[in-house]
Length: 420
Image (cartoon, rainbow, N blue to C red; front, top):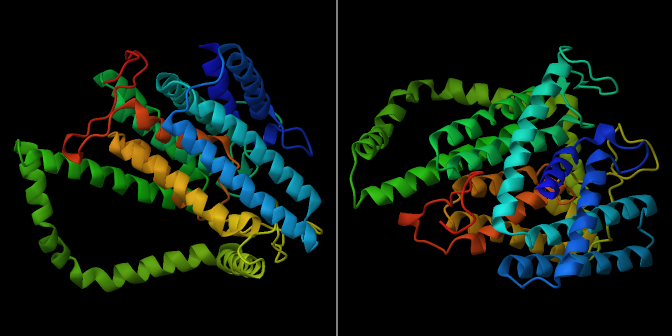
């Protein structure tokens, strides 16, 4: 129990970049995770090698291919003198850390992973409430800067980083509610969604908005599809009403047709204003274009870990290089096409495993992280790998079911440690 709480709070505090030691990538979260890793390695040495399960084999394959791709890129970068030493060292250390963490996570029993997820969700909700209170001066928290202009950053260094935490907290709490067996547990889990959702809005992070905007319709649509296919055999009043509402959609759309030009114009104006803010669109497109160019010039082999873009944003002082702020494009500059393909493979495997197990909210979480990866480099974040491991764990948590009978595993805190 203590180890699981240590892990949960380490994952939660891994986003608290304001609490890190100056000039280092280590802080409270990394310290807690390091202590947990040492304990897990000691326990592994005592118990012996774990069984080679499907989740473990998937994770081993990912890191073997990913390391190979990064190594080839590093050799090419050294040969062409295109390595930024401090950036390569920092990124390499981050990859090594999350590799060890993810491999140790994937060998944990599923019931322990879900217990950690409960602690992470509840602890995250409480922490976000305190951070919001601190941001509005209701709770004194010296040493923390809560705002970047008018954007809430919590305990992170920038709003998008805190937005990633809020995304995971919102959808992981939704998954707790989906899988809980008791009504009061569902209500409690749903209440844990509220603080991070409010904080995510306060960050004014477009990445948070887009990720949640994709994940929620995916969750609702998938749930409706499953219920609809069940209703073919067992019709119910609720499904009948839902079907009638769907059948009425064409009429509803026809009724709003006269207002379509005005709606489209307002949407276009909002997009233009958002992307024009701080030359956001110009910066991103320039970085993405340069990342593609570097990938092509390296023969799609990459140049090793670290940033490689010369088109620096104005806030980066020389001689630092920039990243593309897009996981696939950053990986192209580091490990080439092989690193990109293995990234797509592991996130797809986790998503499919969660969906086949009936854990629709967890599948939505993993998909939202893929959406988030289009705006930021997510593979260095421990909470990203925890979410992926939760998805992979579904491979042996339940046997694959047909879509018409998909039902999530009961993983509430008091659930028995057996299969549903």
